[in-house]
Length: 237
Image (tube, rainbow, N blue to C red; front, side):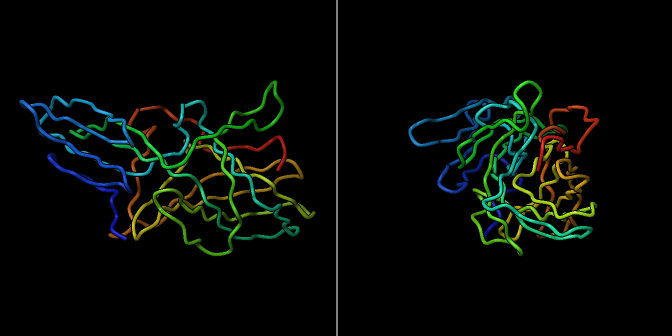
């Protein structure tokens, strides 16, 4: 599959799935257009030297940016043996960011082929609002539509002397490192189980190659200072 996530020099026309995206020049102004069914989303760019970058971004922005947390519920509970390391694969939803670039990046547009849902992790008085996603558990990289879903490789470290049951995993999107290429979207993460009800999740880097490139993080483009990129799950697995 041709990787549509790339940098484009205006003017251009491209289709992301069935969604037409174009940048044209009208009277010295660049016009960005995305057609979604009968709706047309447009923005004007007052810089003819700009480039347009399209890539997958952290899936916590739609329908609104309410929280940096992503909760993935497992289709079936996963039981992990004491003092063991296991590797599994889960899917995650894809959101697509369109950036304008001229020395610095600026987000122009965000869209997705998935419907955004939210849930609460933990008690009502101090729980976390999370983007919600449900996934099967895989033992190898799943075959999925890369415009809709990506795959997370997760190394689970059960540090306790007991069997642990996992029904959900919560991630902090500020630590996500998303990669694209070779027809797939990928991330790599760790989950460290510290007790029956507490675990810590974090993301790790993947090797970058000519076919597998790291996406631009939206929070980096927005110049958001990040102090914490891990997530401590304190309200149950």
